[in-house]
Amino acid sequence: MKTSKDAAKNGGIRALPTISTVPMIAATYFMVAGGPYGLEDIVQKTGYIATLLILLITPLFWSLPTAMMVSELATAIPEEGGFYIWVRRGMGRFWGFQETWLTLAGSVFEMALYPNLCIAYIGRFMPGIVSGNRGLILGFSMIALCTAWNLLGVQAVGEGSVWLNIALLAPFVALIILALGSGRTGDVVAVPLRHVDLLGGVLIAMWNYMGWDNLSTIAGEVEKPQRTYSRAMFWALGLVIVSYVLPVGAVARTGIDPNSWTTGGWVDVAQVIGGETLAIAIALAGLIGAIGSFSALMLSYTRLPLVMAEDGYLPPVFKKLDRAGAPWVAIVACAILWAICFPLGFERNVILDVLLTGLSILLEFWALVALRIREPELARPFRVPGGLAGAVAVGVPPLALMIAAVARNRAEIVGATNELVVGIGIVATGVGLYFLCEAFRRRKHT
Image (cartoon, rainbow, N blue to C red):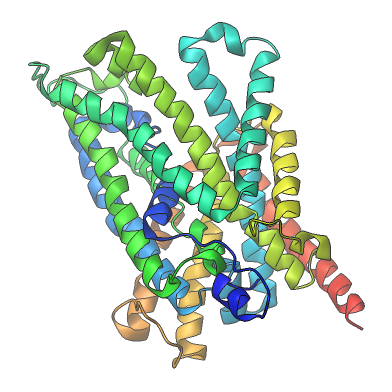
């Protein structure tokens, strides 16, 4: 796909809208975090002090290496399709196809989560609205809303994400202020935990710090990508860490029993600290976080069918753009797929996340090394320090964490089947699909 600058130079072709640094930070925040939601189980498993340490240390071994890798590759190869292009260019068509397959297959499980979260948060303060089939209608409405928003183009999603970030984080700012000024200063280490699980807490933190590569797929629509990507990555990383650590640290001072935290527990904590008004505000922020994350991830995932069509692996119809420069066929097709999967009520499954998202991230780290070897003269506005050894070393901590995740959760069940078996089956399907699609592509070009 042409960048907006290329389009402007191509006589008479309208320049496409672009996204700048601040909207990119906001969109990246939604792709990675979507607010402090999801941290509740870490508090319950490890207590406040350990949670704060985990939230500060995990990004050093997980998020920072990924952000550095993405910054180098995105600024060196700022092309639409992002990580697909990096892996294909560094390791060949087969691995590029697997990178895209792992990402899109994983999206089926991830994107079905957000409409269900939307319904859950609405149900916290208006249970009657989500009862029966009304919950399904609300979920489908959310998908339709995010689809229409994405059809307006990258600028609309990016600028809208800025305002959604403000609306999302404002209730947590109020919660922090009220918690610190409440006068309650409980002993955060006095309450014994019923079920201590430090590794489990680290693994949950990994999921809450995952997604830094997602915005790379819109590189062709980014303003001055050689400069914008690295700035957006590191500012977004700081915002995620602060938005995780400050609320947990403030609540820790109140002495609320960490054993009482459950999934969705921020609403209950807000009720204790600030009453019903703050509880409703936190629940509404959860709704905003679900919408913002779904829409930002849709922005990322829907560029993959576009570049796959350009490479001949999907029908040419997926290359069609609307007036805003958005790949409208890919957007609508993905929305239909996620809408079909939404009623199945997929939950976030740890092993599937590790095998699908984890393997795709590993392929990107390997592409980083491969490109250092194959294209040493490639201009790299941002470079992972340490030469080739540094490029290898930066991928070691994420690899170690993924191995630990698989080892710990290999026995988890999805339905009646071991998650590890399901994940391996999905990976194997990608291998078979490549050879079918490659045969189709070659026949088409002969």
